[in-house]
Length: 114
Length: 115
Image (cartoon, rainbow over the protein chains, first blue to last red):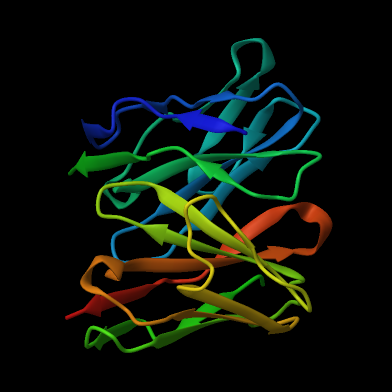
């Protein structure tokens, strides 16, 4: 079964600062990788995903993530955050040959101070 | 596109009663839907996979007789919490698989409080 680790559960930063959230997974086979965001009081929304091809994936709202296969990582980045990026961010993984069951990390609570 | 709704958004019930939660894919057909439970300050825990026209597949430790799942059509899955108890109070979230892209789209969740 897959498992996902996200570190630094709480992240506080100022507007215009750069953000990087780590995500590591453990699974021996080929995976699909996702980052979801949950804004306060809202439902989970897909930020970006990686299935294959260019390991640097660009998502919505200026976010990007890089898949590094050798490190089993899929870190999320944004060069300059805004107050509206305050949210909880979840990394998720499923096995490419599996039944689409997603394994989620514990999430990162990001607070951007204006 | 790829909008998923849930109803109700929140429900309060007495201990021992049953509660039904609906999950609908509004603009696409979903042969597979998933039900999750989210605890405060914790991640989503997959409860079961709901397949249209067949029995749901439950994760280890989830009681299938307690959490009844029915996926009667390509746009609707229901989760019934039977004989609810206070420990069943939680945030229940569904997702639907959109096509062959293997991307899950999530509903807004249902807050259940059992008194």
